[in-house]
Structure formats: C-alpha cells, structure tokens
Length: 329
Image (tube, rainbow, N blue to C red; front, side, top):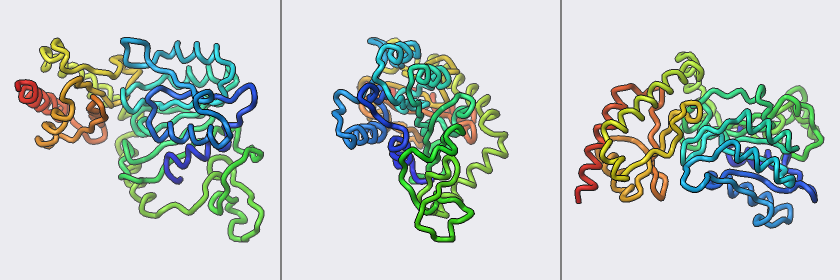
C-alpha cells in the first residue's frame, strides 16, 4: 500500500505518542535521508525541538558499523526514548541489524519498535510477527524488482489488529470491505494493516510487483535464495581481497559491510576514500551496474534471483582494471 515514506508517516502518526517523560525517537546515525526527514517532521508537528527529541547512534570511532550492545546500552540508559526506528539493512554500510535482539531490548525499555525494511525485503529472511515487531514499512523497487515508484508495504503486529483508538489517517480503502460500498460517513477500519490503507492502489504498480513475487515463489522463496546469497557474497568478498590485495594494502579500497554473514544481506559497500566517482564511471562505462552513495561508497549487490558466480568474477576483474586506470595517474 502507498509508498515507503508515506507509510512511515502513517505509522509515526499512530505509534509516536510522546509524553512529558518519553518523547524521543532513536534512529541510526546516517539513516536514509527520507526516514530522517519524516522523523524530524513528526517531532516538529508535536511542537518539540528535534535537537532534544531526536536521538541518533553511530559506530564507535574507527569502526564502520553499529554494535548491538551499544544500542541496547543506550536503550537501558535513556528512559526518555519513546520510539526506536532503525533500518533493518543500513543503506550506506549494508549492515543487517540484529532485529530480534534490538526489538526485545526496546520493548523491555518501554519503547515502540519499528523498522524500515527498504533494503531487507526480498533480501534477507524476516520474521516480523515472531520477533514481536510493532510496525514495519518497505518499498518494492529494490530487491523485489517492481521498478522505481513501486507500491510500498506495511506490517503491523497482530496485537494491534483491533486497536482502533490510535489516531490514523483514514481513507475509503481502509474501511471494512463488508460495508465499504454502503457509503456511510462513519469510518469503520478493517483489521490490522489493511485498516491503514487510504486510496485504491495503482493497478500498474500492483501487477509489476505480482510478476516479481511469482518469480520469488518459483525460486523457492527468500529462505532458499538466502543460501545462494550467502555463497555469492562470500565469493565476492574472497575475490576482492585476492584480486585487489595490493589496493587494500594501499588503502585505496576497503569494505564497510560486516564480514559476518548473519550481519549482512547481499549488499556489499565498498569505500574508495579517493576518486570514488572516477571508479564508478569507469565501471559504468564497462557495462557494470552498481550505484554510488556520496561521499565515498559504491554499493555492489550480487542478487541471488538473477546474478551468477561468473557475474561476480567478471565484476572483480573489471574493478581491478578500472582501479589500475584510475589510480595510475
């Protein structure tokens, strides 16, 4: 339903209920900008100052990813946190957060815990209900392949399915199906996440997503694809350290993404402290599709649904060729 950021807005409207004692929202430092904007706008809409109500946590000095124990320690120490909202897979570093542990710690601290699954949906297995996640939102145009601007997704835990007291944006499509066409003026929401729908979704975005999901089903689903994903990413990591051994030693490249397979999906973030855009354009000119995230990162994602081991091998050979050209001048 809707799109990722609009769904985040809907969830914050309902689940961010600040009080005098609990009013802060905790997100990761360098969260995806749209998430940051949404959180700040909700804090401001409640008449509060983001400088005091927005809390961020980052990696320790000299490290690239955020430690779970640091998140839990902060939750235990700061009693003013009302909502925790992280990305399941961090868009810049590719870190796959320990969702179950963080959700549990957030609940023990009396917080609502929500997740942005933009880089996790279709990438890593998720058990949102079993992990007791309060809410989650995602898009479908990354690993779910629906195309830019594709329809978003929304999860609300079953324990809230009949919680009609929370404020929400209401729309015709969220009304109960049984009486939707009776055109009554009183809004009667459907159970769970469906009660948060507002408008009839676009047929084109729904159909494009359906085609992708059918392919996922034919491939055995995310759990089966995850096995190949781990193998592909491990192969990529090994080749990078082998083919670019000298470049790593010289500090021309480093990997930001955790090496532990349980802490990453198929994304690997490669940092080029100098001339990153030159490397990116060199790869692009050779027909290699990656993406850049300023100031220094190129994201590579061997996706198990359609990438092969030979693709990974060729990428490392092209990257070596590009780096030889870029850094020889």
